[in-house]
Image (cartoon, rainbow over all chains, first blue to last red; front, side, top):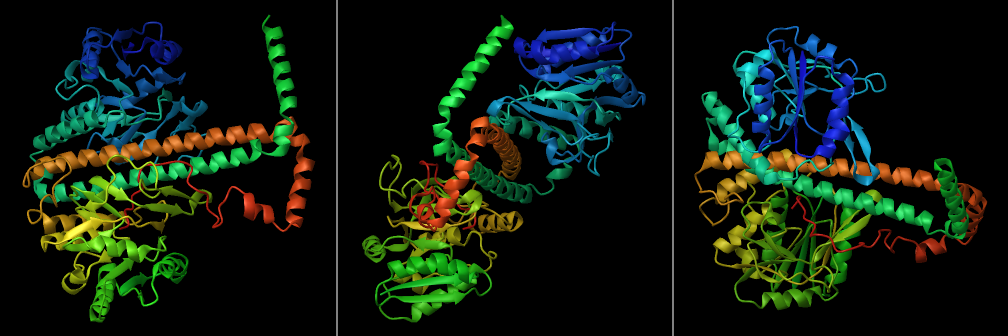
Length: 305
Length: 335
């Protein structure tokens, strides 16, 4: 039996995205747990693990964010295929190798079969590189298989993982739970893999809404895993600090540069649009457009009524 | 006599920016030392300082990047006023206090009377917060600072004789911060003054990140413990808490990088919306119906020799658009 679990903090998101996606792919015997979220995502997910662990016939537990919509009709078959290898503990649709911190995207990403759907600027979508291989050729580095970590917006856990791993509730509220669980699985000798699971992630374009919490979680995770590795990365803290401080400053300038470029581009686009909407021909034909809009509205009303 | 100096790697840029500004600002007896770059910027500037040191009656040496354009016709009077302050070592038009590394803009910026003029996206400019005379924020003030942006540095005579740029630091980055620290270590003041400049610069602020990072490390190593708070992190760790500093900075760098991605994604979304709006307009019946009128209008304008575009178009006399609004102070990572 494949179970599904969601920690819900905004019911409307669940009703709109995660819920319908689960309904699309669930099997008749699937258990579905849409739980309200008691505190951190670590705690909420541990509760879901406890619930799923009680099922004797559990084949996998799918943990997904409330804003994730599974759009893959073949989802359950793909999950079973991913777990055909008994050593696989965690599977996801986005993953990276050489992920050294919870910023896994700074590692070598090998698979990403999702689409980022945003609501800003009238809405739109940004497909990741492996979302539509029939339309967009896969890059040479695209491959499913073993990775260091996966993106936690959708995580599929094996029965072993459900019964033997737990999210580390000491790490914070939200960030880094995925990286930490993958490290735990690998530390126990199990595999973390990507699979060709298709999902939509309905998410704002704001990727860093709480940098302070993110930074704290990053520090805690780095300390946790470096100390377990015998402090391999800590041979020369001074050199690391010097380099990291310089990199942080450089990253800060690059962010400012990106912001300035975005502002400059916006000005250019606005000027372009204004050159049209301010033109004599556009202004002189405004009454025609108003008439046409009124006619369209009337037609819509008539078709509804 | 006020001496001007410039190290040139792009003669065209020098002609369009630095030379134009120096011609505007120089007095009849001013000497202009325009040298081809001799290796690093540090070495090139030291060569100019050596030449200036040999001249008699030098009141100040103005070192100008080739892409910096002085704006004020009364520039010399302004810097003479600023130099009346006792113990002034060096003056600039952008400066900050509590600066801890070469990224001076991470300190508390107190003055920025320049505009960043770019050519990308049709060109435009972003004014720093004291470039125009109105709407100065409450924290704007000229006076003593920790460091200046080096795109324009005005040296007092004492400085010309006694201080040199540190040629061991690299090719370009951090020379201004290091120089200001040297001046302050010698007991002289680093000051901002109200003179205006245009910085003709790309919106790419750091094009050689690896070199910039090396300079950052070298300058921090040189000054930690020598001049407080140089070499300390921005968040108040102890000098030797290297583990804490490393973990914090690595996390901050990650957060900055993700934020940049977020900004780029928003810009992409904005571009798509704009394209959709443009398509809606240009595919509308009224726009298509009035196409002959626009073609006719275009022909008339062309026949008139484009006078309209020069006089009343959206672009200014120099082909760039004026800044649309007051933006946060632009910072320049190339300094």
